[in-house]
Length: 176
Image (cartoon, rainbow, N blue to C red; front, side):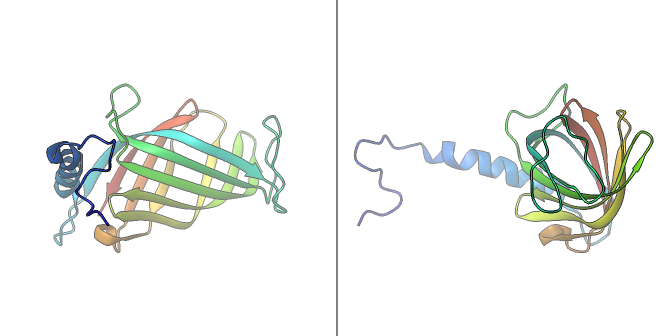
C-alpha cells in the first residue's frame, strides 16, 4: 500500500506549496474575519452565484418555470459565494449557502414565506432558522435575520442584506 504522499504511477507529483497555498490563504482570510469574544460586529461581502433553484408543491411535484408559486409551495435555492460583489469578486468561491422557503402568503407585488437558511464559511455556518421574509417582484433588498450558528459562529446574531443581480445576488453579512 502506498502512503498518501507518494504519487500514483502515471501521475506527476504536485508541489506541496501549490497544494497548501490555497488552504493557507483561506485560513488567513477566515482568521481575519472571525468574531472574537469581545462580540464585535464583523461585516462580510459576497457575490452569490446561483447553482440550483427549484419550486415544488407541498406534495413534492415540481412547478414549471412559468408557474407562479402558491401558498404552501416550497422554494429551494443553493449558491456558491465569492468574496466581493457582482462587479469585482474572487475567482474561487470560499462559501456556499442554501435557502429553503415555504410560501405563506402573497402580496400585490410578491410573497411572504417562512424560511430556513445556512451559509457555510470554512468549517462553520451562519443560520437563519424559521424566519419570516417578504420577497418583492422588484429588486428590493431582502433582509434575513441571523439567529444562530456553528463553529466560530456559535450563538451568532446579525443579518444578511441581499440585493438581486439577475438570478444571482450581492449580499452583506453583519454578524456579532
